[in-house]
Length: 345
Image 1 (cartoon, rainbow, N blue to C red):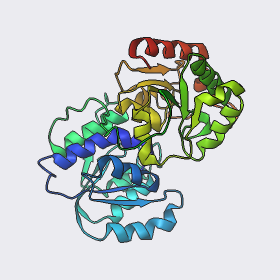
Image 2 (tube, one colour):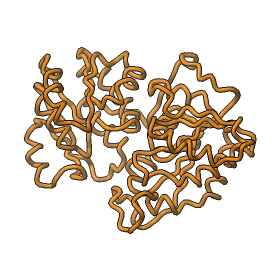
Image 3 (tube, helix red, strand yellow):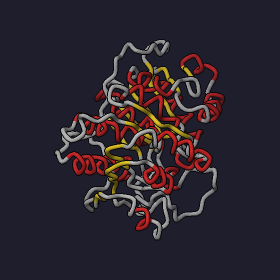
């Protein structure tokens, strides 16, 4: 019940559960935010039998509807994959009838410390995460091994697509630029993105912007700041592309430049050349978990890294976090050139 990147980090383990000896006879229902339904069915419709989706924002208004859907049958198991559980994840687990309820005894980032022991009573299996596991991918892998009883051999997110399923209608080879993020503080300044796009076009590349309808506003600002002569090298698909098509657009690209966001995890799963412009809030958990040589992380290490975005510095509410704002744009250019040389972005 999180965002695109969380699902991409999780989805390979969904398949291990579906094909495991323990659960291979079961039908699978996925409960997720409504924004993820299309992507889940597009990528994993062959193992998902039903999707219960809802809008997390007005959650209380949707609670009765979720109960009606979840109560259609009694499930063999409810598996809550959230390390940072929320009152919403716990209420849904509580409302859903099942013989077995499993989750991780995770952190208290998104719920009060005193609530966690109470919510733990909902479950009859609670997995204590080993202290040496730091990444979301590692959390998912460890829980999958715990519930299936089988060692997982998945080393990172992976995704195989039918290359001809969607026609992107983008002329010529192109690089993806995805300037959006979960919040304005977690995205590079638009002026920096404009410099990156200028750099790419000067090197002879076509650029395709992707993102949500909300991201189309910032993409418009970036495009408006570019030299007029560069506009014929740009395709803007932000806010114009169904989420289920986005993996195919990324897959047909030469590479991706983005913040720590959904496109980053999609690009890694597709084994594309990737530049990630990363702050330190969730660095170990969501950024540095991969080991692909095709991924270059652009960041400025600070002693406060891995702060869960609980920033200790004062900064303007509409500005990037200081750790993200500290990234040297010339290092971004250097990393682009390295990937170009090694992997023909």
